[in-house]
Length: 600
Image (tube, rainbow, N blue to C red; front, top):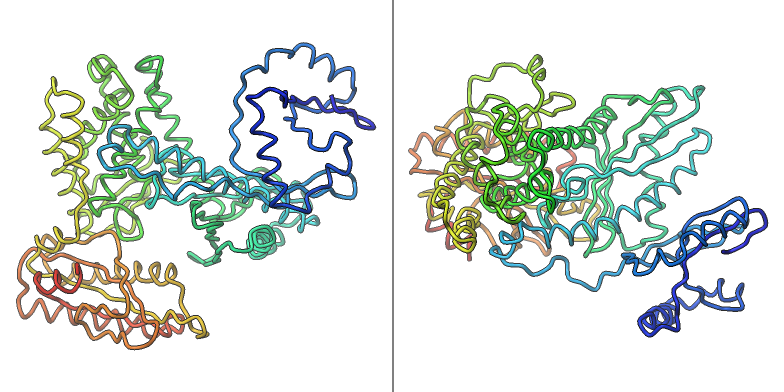
């Protein structure tokens, strides 16, 4: 028990004389050699370094000692995960506060796992790795958020950092997933006017948060950008080997309700996760669970990782390019689980009978998902609730429609006719291949079949299957000394918007069944050129290219239509002052030329 003037702290202290704990002193010695000036505690204690874990604070020493006596021996063998080392500062009142967090990050960005291994463990290893790294980022953001909140004492602000999306569902995968974060800002003062709170918090808080992050992580990369009117998003990369984070604000008034439309949207994002969890809880209650060793939620998360990996590999993942994002795929899978287990009153025995492990159950659910999803009649909406269709306009043409459980808005509003058709084609392909798995197949045979289902659509394969390719190029100057220098992430984001506009206009001119859009851009260097009018001259000219496969040879009139669409998009693009220094162009090239110029 550590005794203070008016309180006491109960701590657990490891026996440093025990051989199994020698590493603790060795670690401390190594850290002290790197943080030479962190000697405050040694100067205050005759025992120098005293390793301990705080268990709780008490108003009286006697209370702490009573709990200590009751807990004696209970703590034996306790494992406590350690993700980072914090640098503490003693404030004038004697309290400590963390001013920097240094993560243990000697591991590479992602574990080196092949596709077969990822399918075998349903992506658990790489997802857990991402989650561990995400906890470090969340801790850093939480610390900076508290510091930023103290700068607005007159608004009586408190803050909570809440992850949502794939990271909150334990379904995040490296490369395709970011850490999505909502900072809930609450004012507990009834006299603070909503307009004043909105003005100061929404415009100044994220800037103050950036300052607080830079104070402790000088090498962090950050950019604050508007997504739409009134909504700003802060993108943060603390370190290259930590997941990037996208941060938005949710402003909560003293009545506990969101204060504006943007805050409503952020709040709905958190609630969507909760609604998915509610559906899984209902399924769990309906089926009575599966096994003691894993739950319905475990099976859902494992299967969702495989579905997301399939969508990414096949080029049909990502809302920014008109396909379904991670949240939409989660709702789609939850909907099918609800339909099977609740709506159709199908018991657990008929579905998971015979599965002996989590991976087997997840593989089975993934195959069921592809079978059910491949027959979905788009544009019929995917909706977890039964009362979400009131505000939906009737769509006569194919579109991807996945409704937010909270707001009933279409999470796939960026979809186009061709992205919907391509998604449907890929789902039918997956379903057809997955049906090759028969009841008595071995686990190895099942994994091999799923490997063929989830195998990546290579760029060479996409080009080779398309007699012609439509390429949209966006080139920018990356020279640091120029005032008009554009950041690659910003350029790609702008380019995705132009790509969607380009795709929609193409669909008005061409047969949509001929188009095969792909959900990712390819970055190119100054020596590469696809053969368009874009000028790559200059010392630091770089760019992105978006590919649309054409399942046939375009006629002269159709080529003219592509040129017309390209000219109009480029003209509108060039009129904006924000796009100064960017060049946009599109062209039609043959498959052979594309393989030579793009793949090489």
